[in-house]
Amino acid sequence: MPREQLAFLFWPDTPDATARRNLTQRLSMLRHDLPAPELLQTTKTQVQLDPERCWSDVVEFSRLSARGDSKGNLDEMQEAVSLYRGPYLDGFSLPKNAEFERWLCDRRQVYERLFLNTLLALVEGHSVGGAYEPAIAAARRYLAVDELDENVHRRLIQFYAASGNPNAALRQYEHCVMVLERQLGVTPQAETDALYQAVLAGKRPRLQSEAVHLDWHTHSGLELPLLGREDAMQELLHAYRSARTGQGQFVLVSGEPGIGKTRLILKTLEKSKTAVRTPVYRG
Image 1 (cartoon, rainbow, N blue to C red):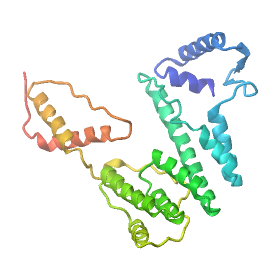
Image 2: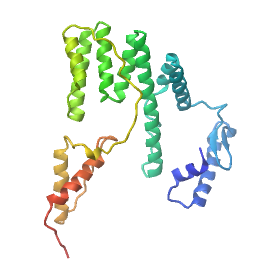
Image 3: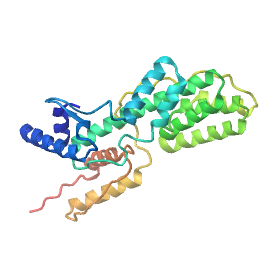
Image 4: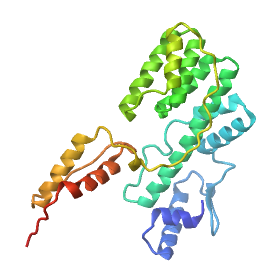
């Protein structure tokens, strides 16, 4: 990694000269903690661990995913996903360092996308050869990370039905319905319903490739309706009204990343502009 980037990640609010000096000191300390000081290789601009003597699951995962996908090598892709054991640097954070947290969040997204794309390639690669068991395993692992992908739910229904397990196919449809309703407040697509009806009628639906490589775009969540947060919003509005009358209080909004905490707060603030009409003046 570039020295400049490392210095900024760890000391974003420090003058450049001080940040570079801090980095030099920390690298010196790190050398003493390594089994062999020469494992850490530095230049005036770069910092790295000796690639000939250090092994990284992240580096190997990235290499195998890219190589296996480009050559259609299922064994290499399977080896790649076996190395993925959760989010990048799971359990580690520097909550007081916003720049590092943003960088960490970006890295986690990059590797998760690569993981999911590799699983999709495995799903399709195994299904082409009629290897339903490993295809099902890859699809289930995909949904363990992204349970809202209806295409993958459909593939699972198809695989279960094609492998002679219609009951599992029907259960997968029911699970899909539940997930979409709970998370998004929507019903399955017409294709999913049609597939369900076919399985229910005792038919084995023809397998068609549906899973494709993910094309990721970021859309503003504020354009979508806010569902299932009415009670929480009312509590926040009540606290806001109380604060405006001089009854200050503390409200903690917590939860897993990505569940809509920021959006809930923004929506509450937006609503508060109309919910509280009478200004309060205090001397």
